[in-house]
Length: 565
Ligand SMILES: Cc1cc2nc3c(=O)[nH]c(=O)nc-3n(C[C@H](O)[C@H](O)[C@H](O)COP(=O)(O)OP(=O)(O)OC[C@H]3O[C@@H](n4cnc5c(N)ncnc54)[C@H](O)[C@@H]3O)c2cc1C
Image 1: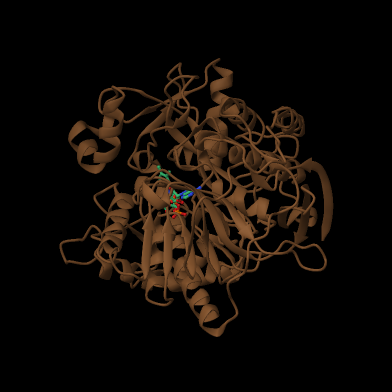
Image 2 (image 1 turned 90 degrees about the vertical axis):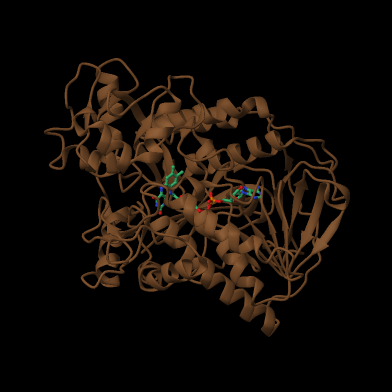
């Protein structure tokens, strides 16, 4: 184990006015994607009172946008063991095998639960769920809905199930509620962070739930999704600003594997100035035979990898960045014209519609594409029960790091992770609440800096993150990004009544996540999975077969640790 202090310091609380109202529940669930909704629905039946809060509306988050499907060994010819094998290979030696085993073993039952809840997956003529295959899977095990609209159907079914019980006194839902910080109790005698006992949140509402308040609970479940907006372009929706990871960090919890970011190679390129969520063109389009060509019309993936355009995502993403540089542009083209309009419209209705909004037709046009951030394998480090390093704090879904993805996520394992671990968390919390292991704790003001980064700095944060811990990384590029991020000024204040807006709170979260991600990417001097260092192009098992962790000490210093497996 190697532990070091980094020299980086971070605020331990967001600047905000003091809570003007307080509410309480047994468990506070933050986020309403697949992970948060699944956890809340199961907890509702197991603890007296659950509070679900979500930043915008119930259907918000990446879940709604998922196209391909959910992986689970449902076919007679498939097995959890085979699914495990594929997951471990994709994870490049860093998967937590026990967590991955739980994922693949419990996955099929969780899919059946979803079907029982009302999710309509695509069925074959025999009435059985249709299973397809995606990159890295050696069996047909991807369940999908509406062709390429799987996430929308899952979200619809979960939101409908929640709406059906919304009047139940055992559950309260607050929408338009941006969680700011995880509230913590008194630190222990050794100065270690105190237990989680609720959240502070800003609600755009009416009456008693308006403005900044506090929601107190015996356990807090962070299900806030990804960090995509840290980068200039991403497939993630606007809510994906890494709020859960940043809040956990400020509260003293450990984050792990932050350097492992998956960049999707084929995202619609709308010009150098395009920011935020961009349209994903699924690899299934390449799977059906579409080619990648550079601006001169050359098929540059031929000869670069035996699978050509169907090489692993990181290989294709790197090749696109390099080919774009060679041809003096920042994009290449996807050519699906030979597949024909009738086929493309039927097979890819969502993608066809999304591209049409930008004036592109897969059947007639070369579609400009470039890599964009897509998925974060790292996050709040949790164990098999979803417990973080902080008593009472849980994390689930993309904001968590269970270790199932290791250094790279196998396609369609992320929705499954949300389902499986939300279920586990609900059971763990219910047992602990009932057994008295989790009780009410009074929040204490945390020592350390209070921070806010102005919303005008958002683009600077995104540019630094894209140039530093982007698709192609190097010590030089990462050091430059770290310097740029450190130069971004904070409105630090010891006063508790700083006036702020959602944009400032989110920008502070983006800045903190970008800073620790850059640090983790600097630390890992090798190439593995989603982490490509051009100055260390090989995988170094002797030195780096293990996991990195980052946390903030009570005085605001950022510490890092590497633990070999
Ligand atoms: C375009 C696209 C396609 C994808 N395709 C697939 C696929 O085919 N298969 C697959 O397995 N995975 C896919 N993924 C990844 C997968 O969709 C996500 O990893 C998964 O949906 C994450 O679920 P989640 O519940 O953790 O988070 P999300 O679904 O992102 O939900 C997060 C929730 O937290 C809320 N929130 C965030 N911050 C706060 C805050 N501060 N306060 C309160 N609430 C907050 C959000 O509003 C949202 O409700 C895809 C992702 C994208 C973007």
